[in-house]
Amino acid sequence: EFFHGYTYSGHPLACAAGIAAMEVYQDEDLFSKARLLEQELEHQIHTLQGEPHVVDIRNLGMAGAIEFSSKLNQPSFRAMEIFQKCFERGLMVRYTGDIIAIGPALVVSTKEIEFIIETIRGVVRDLA
Image 1: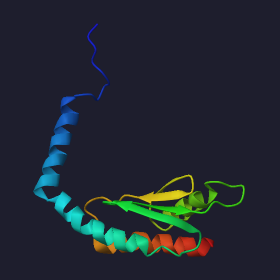
Image 2: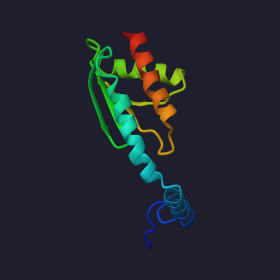
Image 3: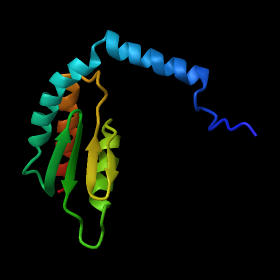
Image 4: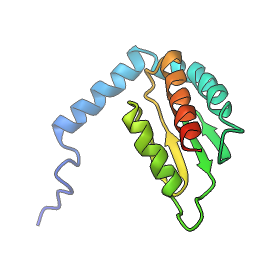
């Protein structure tokens, strides 16, 4: 039997898409742009410190996480509520446990980073 892996492993079309994506990253200098934007994201996300129920804020590069205190006898419920309300306001975040995570695309603008943080802030305050 000839082992071929998964249907997408080494598939010429998938490889071509990957190569094209790497060329866009290089041509548009996205990693250098991200290095500048990560400072803005770090500054903005840490302005959430002191908001209701915020326990911790972490970030690395263009990824960030906000940890919230659990509701009594309802672990992960607070983050799920925040996720739902953010979605209703046009922002998709991820949640796991009582943590929401953001990871904007490397083409994000400063204005869009502000939208992300201010949307989270508004939701957190509304749910407090």
